[in-house]
Amino acid sequence: GYSGCLQYHEDIARARAASGAGAPELLKLRQYFDHPLLIEAFADAFRAARYQLADEQRAAARLVFTAHSIPVSADAAAGPPADGGRLYSRQVADAARLCAAATGFTDYDVVWQSRSGPPQVPWLEPDIVDHLDDLAAKGVQAVVVCPVGFVSDHLEVIWDLDNEAGQKAAELGMGFARAATPGTDPRFAKLVVELVREQVRGIEPRRLGEVAGYGCTPDGAPCAVGCCAVPRRPTAGN
Image (cartoon, rainbow, N blue to C red; front, top):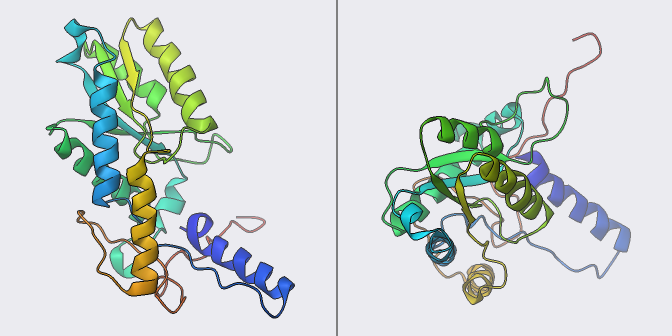
């Protein structure tokens, strides 16, 4: 989408123009939501988190994936029009599918977190905290939450999951464990090296998924025609 891709290109272009001659060339690496090293890191993190649960809860624990929610309209416009939009939510779903398969799960949930803005603006749902209420009503005794949409344990992961979701699970008497993000996992560093080599050496990308991924071309051109258009905003009176 615009705020996650094209806007960065625009900011980089302005910074280079302000720096003048000799400004470094900056390329945005391609999307890597389905890179095998990322999937391996999340799968191992899930396995480790699952063993944080009590023995009697572990076998029946529900696997729940989360990613940062965005406005429904922004998701609808994400990606080249030829791809049908919704590229963000489809990539999140594909990453969750790959992670679940790597851990032997075929039944899991994909939910959202960290929404902001006016409450009347629709965002991707359900929210993780609301989803825990629904799971408890169905008799689920424990969950393992995997923040598949994040690469580090930053504020939104720690507050929205470890605090808000964790506290909700405690209120419900539900076992709760949160998988770590890749963070400083050496595989994530190797992933970045691979992405750089794709740019400078033209090596074949490693991908596991079924959903399109985009990024800069080797010559630095924008990722795809029509991708990440500036969102239309309501005008006065509309």
